[in-house]
Image (tube, rainbow, N blue to C red):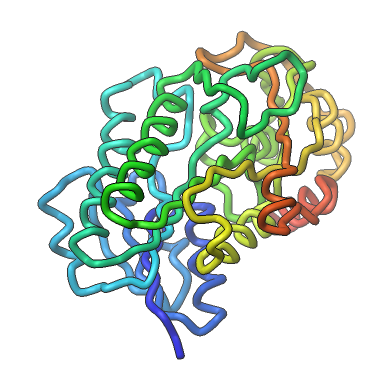
Length: 310
C-alpha cells in the first residue's frame, strides 16, 4: 500500500533525488517549491508539483488536501555567502518557513517531520581539525548556520509540545549529479567542477588547505528516506558525512584528474564571509544508532557527476 509524502524543495538538488527515491518505491509524492533556487525540470516524473512560498502563511492552504504520512523538509537557500548578503531574507526562507511548516503539520495531524540541517551549525568546531560531533556546542559563523540551528530548536519544541516526531540531519558537503552548476555561491564541488567544465580557468576562494567532508547524494538520500519510520531517529540530530577529510587541494586535483584536464589554469582569490576553514563529521552517532554509513568514494562520485554533465 502506497503512502503520501510531502517533499519541500523537491525541485532542488537533494529534494529531487529524495522525491524520485520515494516514487520508485511506489509512493505518492507531492513536491512543494517556490523555484527560487530549484527548477521545475528537476521535479521527477510522477510527482505532484505545488508552486508555493513556504515562508508565507497564507499559501499553506494550497497544501491542505495533501494529508502526508511524513514531511521531508528540504526547502531553503543553502549558501552561507548569500545569507550574509540578506540575513533577514535568509531567516524568512529557512527559519520562518520551518516554523510555518511545523504549524501546518499540527493542523494536518502529521506526526513525522524530517529536516535538513547543516554542518554550518558547528562553525569552526570545538577544536581545530577535530571531527565535529553532535555533542559539540554549536557555534555558527554565518547567518545561514544561525537559522539552521534555530530551526532545529523550534522543531524540538514542536516535538515536546505537539507530538511531532522530528529528526534533524546535519548535512555536510553534499555533491552529485543534478547539483546546480549555475549557482556559483553554493556547493564547493559543483562550483569547482563548473569552472573546469565550462570556463577558461578555475577560481578558488580562500586557502587550498581548507578541508571539507564530501558526501555523495545517494548516501544522503539513503538516510533521509531510511529514517522515515525509524523510531531510533525520533527527536535526534545526526551528522551526515563520510568522516573523511578532503582538502581543497586534494579535491581540485581529483576533479582535474576525473575531468581529464590536469593542466587546467587556476587562480586564487579572497575567502568568503562566514566560510569555515575546515569541517569533517564524526559519524559514529548515525552509524551506531541508525546503522547508516556513507558508501560512495569521492572519486567514484565525481566520475558519476562528470558523466552526468557531459
